[in-house]
Amino acid sequence: MMALYGVYYLQRSLGLDPYVSLAVMVPMMFAAGYLAYRYVIGVASHGRDENILLVTLGVAIVLENLALFLFKSDTRTIDTAYTFTTVPIGSAMIALPKIVAFFGAAATAGILLLVMPPRPISGARSAPARRSAKARAWSASTSSTSSP
Image (tube, rainbow, N blue to C red):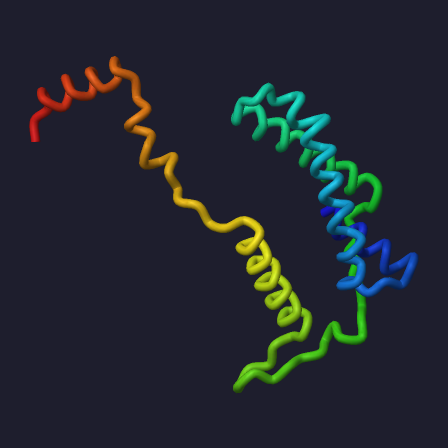
């Protein structure tokens, strides 16, 4: 939501194309996310997953209500020269912004796969191996007494 309003105001004030403004907004939102985690979410969560969810929900509620207060509930749009441009693909007419978004998402996924290669999900498979001896004994004693 913050990035959407940022792109909107960059287009309104500087006349930047929405796709060009991504070069400004992506680093800004990365910095905002880092700062939010470093100084709000990480501090208030104390490392517990439940607290992280609650703090994140609280931050989202505050941001949504702040945006509603500042910007009201008016609909805002950005009109560009290519907003209603369509491209014929087979018998379908696809909107140009959707094609650009698709290839942008595919390129981002490809870059992320290069930067962060997939790793096996080993945590789920090794969880039974990490059980304590008491838990293994309890599991063994109950499994031998259960009926099919």
